[in-house]
Image (tube, rainbow, N blue to C red; front, side):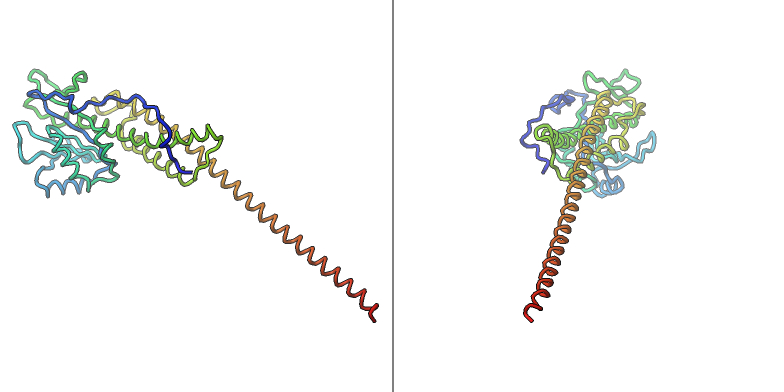
Length: 317
């Protein structure tokens, strides 16, 4: 049976309300920050070479410290006094500072060849994170104003590490959203199976289908638990959102629930296969018994006809 959930209405769950691009203030001194999660990973070495060959962005390293899992690119051609910056994370996320949506879309098209495990375009655009940033003269350190969704940077200062910190938090949030969208599709299939079990008292499903779904869930859990720090008790990034902490744990719990149900179905499918094999063995044994009975009957009839022939021979003589 195929995992078809098209006929099953799913209750919409409450989700984190993302800031829309239309809601961001465009007043003087406010600049746009966009974060996208587009793939499982980037080939950063090839991406850096591609940026050099394109000659539109100049790849650099962070001045504060050398981080091998990111590529920071600055626009070669300036538009206004505020520079444009792009931060690529090896984990498949990219953050744009002071770039328009059109420029961001062009860069997203450019990095497609360097992606490993690309996400669907609708997921990439739906789960993007939108923020703004500004410079304030009287502040001595960078901060986040959550009420206004605004990063505050120190003017005339090297904010490269703080930009990386903010970018990392936005990238993790975008990745979390993409993983939730991926889990939604898997959870819909699992819900379809549970509905069949509740209605029919059985779930006739192909073991290969269950194993394939289990593989997708384990891959997603591997990304959540081992390739991200969303479940870490102590975060090295001081600006990680509490939303990411809570929803990372919730996502892991939902993954565990889906895995448990699919493992149950996998065991069920294996038992059905064993029962089928046992019935085949029983059928073969019955067939062998029938053949032996047939052979015994034939031998009995042959011996009986031979004995009758010997009795008739003297009489004829």
